[in-house]
Structures are given as structure tokens and as C-alpha cells.
Length: 331
Image: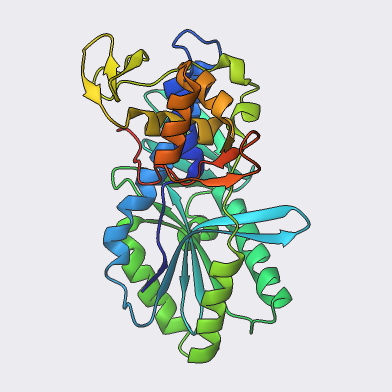
């Protein structure tokens, strides 16, 4: 049973918005594109695991996607997928990487060989061990009976080769699998752990606690790339030709390039504003970002959105979230 659905990561949405608003020739654009590709690949890798999760007994397994919990003062840990049963917990760390992956347990690194080039990454086995320890501490601090925790690294690409240094490392053999082997790995755990630790009441309590204490990561994406508001392109993006010159004509937005008409093209622009700049906006800030001059037009657009307001009429501010949460990343 899915207790927490997978959502498009807020960081992925922010990166996509930033790519829409950052000039093509901006010196930091390549860094943004690189990180966007990495986060999108990770998200697609997680989605590809759904096929194998569907084979699990939904009465026995509670599935939580992208749970982020606090384990100490201002310190958090995040798990791609958490599988909760009355007997044990499985942490799944999903890696969507091609080529040959060599898990170097001597120097605690992951080496990827692709197209004749080798590249080193942090050791995922160390990462999942850390997640296991944090989760154990979190369970103890929340007075949950101690459950066995099994961390696994799941390689989502079936064509990816898995190797290890030293060869046939026990750690790699026990913790790293292809997605297609997930079901058999779970069956192996079932044979090892048969006794229930949690009652139905306790497992429901733990499920509610995981959902209640989940704390989504919401980074300031401009600060992350050392950017400022002034670096961003303003205006309304044409949904057809992606030109940033749409003008208000008789209650519609008209693209100056392809001449397409839209009644609500401003909604996507304000979504970009909320993702990149602030969830709070004033009439003046809206006019500046959408590149319109009319105070009354701006007031009309804000009124039509039926947003929560803050403050008196002359100093009114509008809460933009949520506007367009269903948006999916480009592929």
C-alpha cells in the first residue's frame, strides 16, 4: 500500500523554472543544466522502480516515497523509498546510472566507466549505512520498537554492469542489486525475518508519524548557484514558441512572434516567480515580473487567481503557492 506518493521534487521544478528564465549565454547556465540532468535522471530512475514495487503484497508493505526526516539539530536525512512492514524496514537508494559501476570498498568510492572515461562518486554503500543509522536513531527517539533495517542500493538501468573492488565484496553482494532482483531480495529477507515486531496499531502509528514529520527539502535555488533576481529573464513565456514577449490585448495574451493567444499564460510565469523568487508577491512586483504597466490589470489578474492575501489594501501582498503543482519536467 502506498502511504506517501512520489511527487515531482521541488528542486527539479525550481531547476526547470531557472532554465526557462536564465539567458542561454549566462556563464552559470551549464552548471544549472548539469544539475538539472542529474536530478531528472534520479527522478526517472525512481519512477522506473514502480513496476517492481507493484509486485509486493500491498497488505504487508507500506510504501513511502522520498521521506525526509530530522535526526538532529537542523540535520536531515532523506530516503528515496522506504518499505515498512510489521517485521522490518527496507531502505531503497535508487541509482539511475549507465556504463560500468565499480564499488571500490577499499577507498570507499563508486567508480563509473562510460565511453572510455572513468569518474568517481561518493560511495552509495556508506550513504545507505548512514541512512540506516539515522533511521534507527529516529525510531529510538520517537519511542518506536526497534525494527531490523535493511538498506539496499537499487540500480534502475538493467544494462548497467556492477563490479566491486575487492572482487565479490560481501558488502556489494548484500547491498547492491538490479531492480529486477528486488522481489527475490525481499523474499530472502522474508525468510530471515518472520516474527512481527509491530502490532497493527503500532505500524499505523509509525506510518502517521513518518507522514507528519516528513520535512520536504525546499532549497533557495538562486543562492545555490550564486544568482540574483536581476539575472532572470522577465515576461510571459509563450506556451507555443517559448518566446518571452507576450502582450495583453483585449483580455488575452498574444505572442509577438507566433501570434498564438492565451487567456492564462500568466499563471505559468507566476509559478516561475514563486519557485525562483518568492511565494509572496505584490501588485508592483507582479507588474515588474510580467512586464506590464497597468495597476488595474495586475489587480484583476491577482483577483482572478483567488489567492490568499496579507495586509491592508494599499500594502496588500498575495500568497502564490500553490499555482501549478501538476507541472511535469520536460523530457
